[in-house]
Image 1 (cartoon, one colour):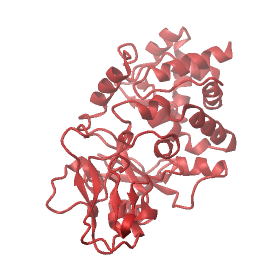
Image 2: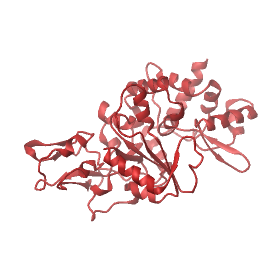
Image 3: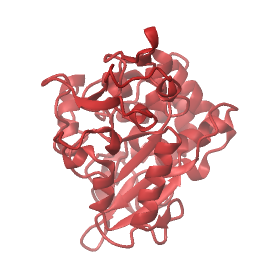
Image 4: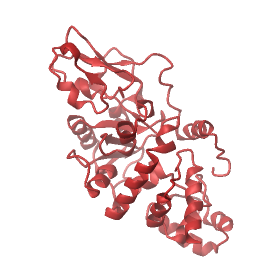
Length: 360
């Protein structure tokens, strides 16, 4: 009976455009059982993405409204669901597994939970989360890799996203923490997952995010580039609230490209690296920095495999002769990101062949 409630929740999470694919072993059920109590899972399994009163959720779940309200408030405190203040009441909404639930488990992440996450990723090899279109994430290129005369949109500049915000915070990278707990990962910086908001003071009392200034956020972004980390964010044009600084050895999405052969179309920006053969001195400084294996050095001249290039631009930051730079991909090769998260959900649901009318 208990397993049934977690299976129902898993199916609900898979009905979200983001996806939550099932496995043969059922590890996703054990993962959910580690995060949700049975009572919490029963409520979450009937929740919608649109935030609504506890009474509506309780009615669908067939439970007492007051009890449901208390449980939902506790779930919101534990960051298992989303909430907002309505007129005289709180409104509650379902949260996707990625991006959402997984990232919010950072305060409770231990060896057991990290091991379950790892098993789930290995069994699904990313699954629909990273293989379906539009992509969940997209790479944001390093600004200095883009020629000054090349048109670039505001949503393609990490610095611009930070400049437009009014409050900023930073938290540990949940993927790097997870990998360290299972005895893997790298020695790159951990506290560099940036969050931001269009209103002031959002992170002042957060239990997860450390409030920082805009200048500190820009410095963390620069330090991430120096550490060879790839900037990425949600795959839409407006409404961003985070920038991840990722590596292919820890990030679940980038690992899917590096380990499981998922195409870089699942993450790449609208750019690709280009080598000026006359400027290249064959030093090879760029080779180790490319996490996607897109660069090679036959005959001591750099060559870019455009199909493997994610368009992050990190290679250009270490080129001593400025022989490497980014160029926009041909028209139609990388479709413009959806306008916002709502348009992204509609497109994603269509591509996955699912109806989200019941879950909106």
